[in-house]
Image 1 (cartoon, rainbow, N blue to C red):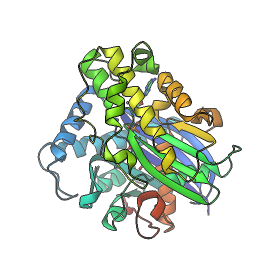
Image 2: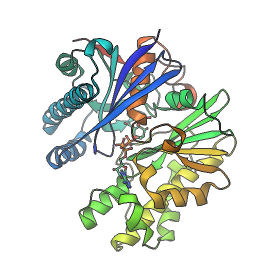
Image 3: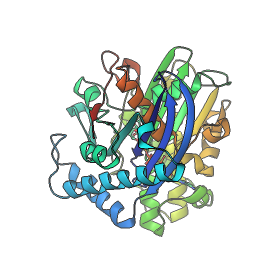
Image 4: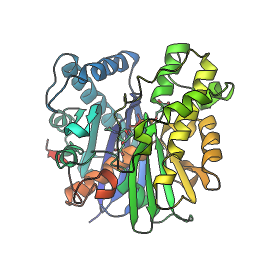
Length: 366
Ligand SMILES: Nc1ncnc2c1ncn2[C@@H]1O[C@H](COP(=O)(O)OP(=O)(O)OP(=O)(O)O)[C@@H](O)[C@H]1O
Ligand SMILES: CC(=O)N[C@H]1[C@@H]2OC[C@@H](O2)[C@@H](O)[C@@H]1O[C@H](C)C(=O)O
């Protein structure tokens, strides 16, 4: 049975809520619908940053001490607004939507302690939008000993099924953190690779007041501190085989020497590209086709560095294939919700390290 699913993603970049519609039977993607975006305001973003800082003290996923309570309310409201304006804009009736996949906002990710925390009140969202909401996607995987991330690989695999490109195919998502899906026939392997845009965004914001390095223009003018990149790549994370996952702030303590904005941006962009390339020797075969998605796909300096590092593989922006670099994760959580409704696996031993294929997600009804 074909389902109409709306997916909602608030990623580690803390930029806003992505919303997208997909039609799927949970196995194949029958059609990609429209997508939308509801940015966080400066005030909301500041609150989320504070929530991330306070979340380091959490020991249970359901606790909301201090600012986390208010942050959860704000996240829920932003998602309700995102759905309301999206459905109004595209004339989508709520009766026609079977399920909403609500990822929430990750504020802490410590799979080794069997803890991953996404804030967002699914029951309140279901009431507000009057559609069933699937949520808490990562909880079952982590409780069963999995990494709890990444979750998009099963969606990348579904998209890649009808892609006319030489395999192995690697889909690279460059959000706040970067992750890859390796697809070669029936083989699906996935992991986080290291930083995405988060370190770069934080540095650019600190030194220039801009939220990110638009199109990678700042980095294009800078010189790379190669010694920093080489030293950072020595961290044990990069040599560990997949599956593996990261907290957004895993590398925040890396001490970048005092660098001018352009040089710092060039250095952190090179670090992100090199960290993605560092996963290739850990895969069964080098990829022949690489598809880049996520906000980092708009960073032309990062794309240039990736092409250099991943040669001779082709490196293409997901948009060039008729996929959507911006809406990919929101689509994925719509697809995952449809799979969850059917009890199909969301994660596998080779994507999160969980012992057996796991379904997941809880349903909140209006
Ligand atoms: N025009 C642009 N030029 C360069 N970088 C951009 C541009 N637009 C967005 N980005 C980068 O993409 C980021 C947002 O990416 P995305 O929405 O994929 O992240 P996310 O979904 O929050 O993260 P994650 O995948 O880690 O959960 C921004 O923070 C910025 O660094
Ligand atoms: C815990 C968490 O929210 N992780 C995110 C983060 O952002 C990118 C990378 O790290 C990925 O592992 C994951 O998001 C995507 C949507 C995923 O689960 O596939």
